[in-house]
Length: 58
Image (cartoon, rainbow, N blue to C red):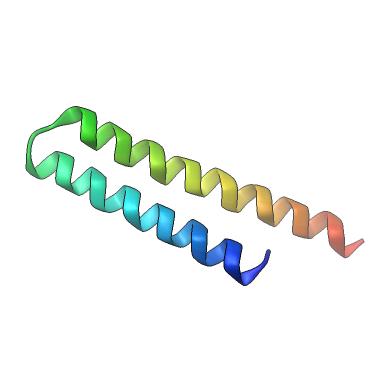
C-alpha cells in the first residue's frame, strides 16, 4: 500500500469518526450514520489495498 493511499484512508476514517461524534453530540442520527458509513468505506479501501499488496509480493 502506498503511503499516500494509507494517509488518505486514515484521513477519511478520521473524518468519519468526527462526523459520527458530531451526530451523536447533536442527536442527529443521519449525520451519525454518514460518519459510520465514511469510516466503513475507509476500512474497506484499506483492506483492498492490503489485499493488492499481498498479491504483488508473489
